[in-house]
Length: 600
Image 1 (cartoon, rainbow, N blue to C red):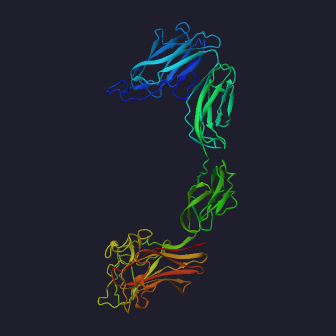
Image 2 (tube, helix red, strand yellow):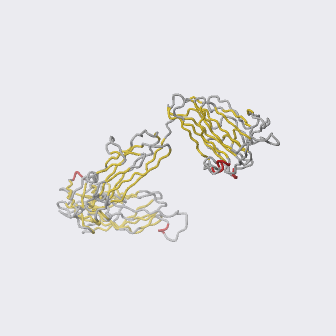
Image 3 (cartoon, rainbow, N blue to C red):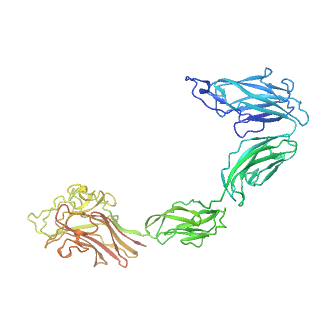
């Protein structure tokens, strides 16, 4: 028979040595304890049956390897009149009253054997005490030095593993369980386990009751696990509740296990098992696939109201969805109940909201839900000015006294672009509006498709943005000294609904001048169905509209990227035209991210 000796979860007759690792043995230490492994008995008693001719091997399992070799002396003390050599023997021999076990470096286990004889009287128990005396080398004696082995021919009950206190436990609600090990020898009848008031025991950690009756078949190698929980009734007296679990069997002395905890009044709570993930994307007017989580009540006295924010809906049955749901508090008491949520966005963009759970008398429980409202439209035509090879400026090689088409120059920012099936094409013209002493005024001005924000005069630090809104390039109008008119390709929008035209515009925040011949001006129009002109933006510096909404100097979008949108519902074609007229190098207008979108 072999008794495995472990530090925890020991079986009947288990002996254990607690291991404490020290420092490297190559260093110098002031005491043995500083460099070795502490050896302790983890339990103080065990039991075996008498007349075991094969002996009882007691195996001492360490928790880790020893660092260096050593020895441990174990004293053998026969009790109850037992005589070594007649009533029992050991291996190694202990005729001198002790024996020594060598502990090799790197050891994880030691063992010795006890051979009990048939010397026990009827209904009697004899015992042998073992004591850790001294140690050398890489081990030393710890604080738990004594262990008693009982030799018996009658039933005996042993308990290992102490329980900790159960803490605060609410009336009407069981605590979490703890467990301990019960070992028996020579059991002739059932083991009866009886819990004190406010406690319950179980053999499987599932079915709990005030008592258990365990047959010998319930024990494996003489041991079984008992589970215990504190379970005060809803009317139990508040305060400390302590007592002992009693273990009894015919012919054996009772053994007890102390238990203690404090009974408190129930604390109402809403318990959420929140497992929702981001709902991903859905278009406004559409709904996502549903997700679910559970809501459980604890000591509630009122119903739970689940309220979801705008853009989400909730249901208790996967059929009827709305902005809130009510859960009967008695139905969800201790019963996790499914709640279903779906995403129903009302706008485009990232949406993050909070689901709220309320029940009078209990703290609210909230968590965040997220999703993305996706644009359902398709892109009919677009340009972010990424396909042309951008430049830093444009020089007009013709006189500015006359209106004329603008042409691309080698090395300059392009002012014309022919579409190849991707981005929109465009064509630029110069319209003479001003009288100059030196008519050739467009000399490397930030006009045309610019490869990045202009870095000359003015610089970004003087009021220009740090980047275009979509990609690296955009179209610029700087110090135009006349109207630069950019006309984009006409786009067929037949067969689409809810069509919109949009672009991003930046107007530098500076002073814009009025003159009788040509005020500074920004004008954006759309030619629809081949002839009708729709005004999108029409701003100018003019004495007659000073302080009015179309006064360029007080336009609310100065100094920032501003999205511009036009509804094209009901039209069949559209052509965008942008016109800018300025006459000073600080006056800069930029456009980017032109899109025409609609629903198929």
